[in-house]
Length: 194
Image 1 (tube, rainbow, N blue to C red):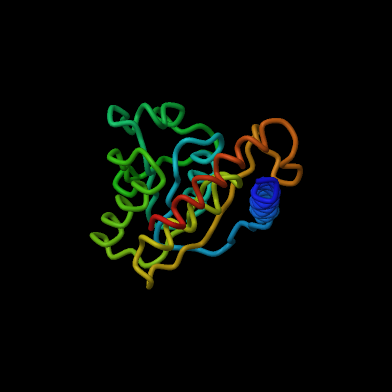
Image 2: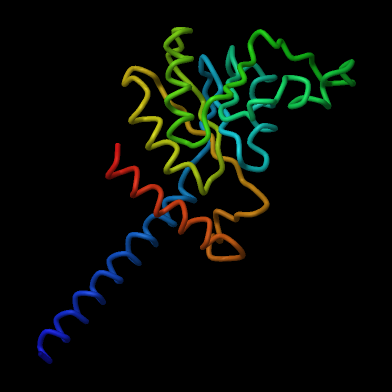
């Protein structure tokens, strides 16, 4: 009986150490992403994080892609409600947005669904490369899902965004460990699921 408890304790301890090692490796990878400086056919912004849309819009206005796809937009959202600051006359240094080249994807509610809906759009439009914009803490899971869902011939350029609620260089501060723990669990869920 005592030997069984010892074996159980050692097994549990080894499992916890393995999870801790995997989590720390996952956290280390988070800061390793670099923003791709190349151009693509479309920019895909995943909603849900601070600064993502602003960065996507900035790249779009700089001509880094012909299309801007905003994935996971609320079903009641309109172009005007999203870009209300730009709806009127452009201020100095600001350009008008060509709404024919901005696509609001309103059907998805998760990263997995984002990828499925974006796949439909890029296949319809014959898009061969995208710039994927999301937060640093979300990039590993998002890039994994998009690589699994999109056709192999579609190039995916990663563009991680720094956010006020997560410091990718000091991920152990503030809410960082919690954000990463959630991402860690979701990442491995998707690794086994898709």
